[in-house]
Length: 222
Length: 210
Image (cartoon, rainbow over all chains, first blue to last red):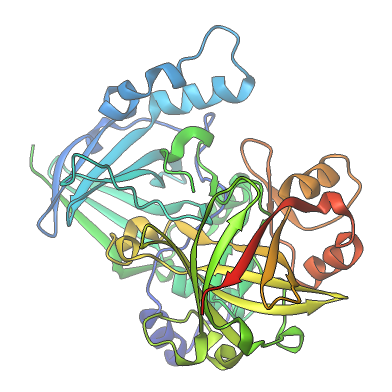
């Protein structure tokens, strides 16, 4: 990682600006923490975003029976239950669709990071027939953002820059387990949860891994 | 196609056609491609359970409605756009390539976003990685053809029983996400392609309507 990328690569990076998708989550039941400073209603680019503790969400209540099965739960179900109890539901509406993601927070090297994974997306305008847009023949993955809480009114989310990581991996400057297929332009980080955490221990404070194109500023509404 | 919420297998879900083997990488390289112009046209499909629909197959070379990913445009002359309809509504669309692997022909399907997905929030959609699905193709003497899906459960069983070494990642439910390279996938197909258990018995028969 000592070789710093050239200007040409930076340009490529900007053109490809996107979040990086990981197969495994950054946050698991044994590392998740809560920080209720993120809860509330937020504005970002004229869009309202609601963040609320997952167990208090309508989504959780609507599916409570599925989450809280009988006493004989598997280890996985118990772990999921712990994770759900500390996770957040992020909701927003855009162009007639409501999007819901699960957010899990972890602290690494004194910094907060959030793992996002999609939960559901459905039309809000067509009540007679709900239209979902969760795509078929696809694998649902995760995105990761550094969370910077500025007082009680502003949060900055800096998503890991997929273009930068792709370029570094392709150039052999960065080692992280991944799958890459240039024919279909597929790039997926397949590193384990533990390796993702080690990766952020090493590079979490390195500004090159973030891109202002992938930054989101949330301003508190209530 | 599942339309339930994604948390049912928390954090990691493959939304796929039931039982069909899905892979992160394609099953073909350019040298394996076969182009059969007679596949272009309109087809009706029928399955053993009586279900059916209509399918349009276009040459990818002339297709301007689809944004081709990566370097696909370099091989588009050998590709197809396959669109499935039910009650005149598009239910699925794929970029497809026909490849000869060993003595059989196979279709590699890669999903094309439907209109709702194209207009969906980009951040949300970035969480999804498109997967390839594969079918064995049997060209019939009457001008039609049959598709049989490669069976995911068969490969999963081989992996579980440690009877095969093929690159994969385990999801939180313990299911395998196949990340094998094209070369590895072809080795699997060459070795198990004639094993009746590796291919789903249910076939979809395509008959040309014009």
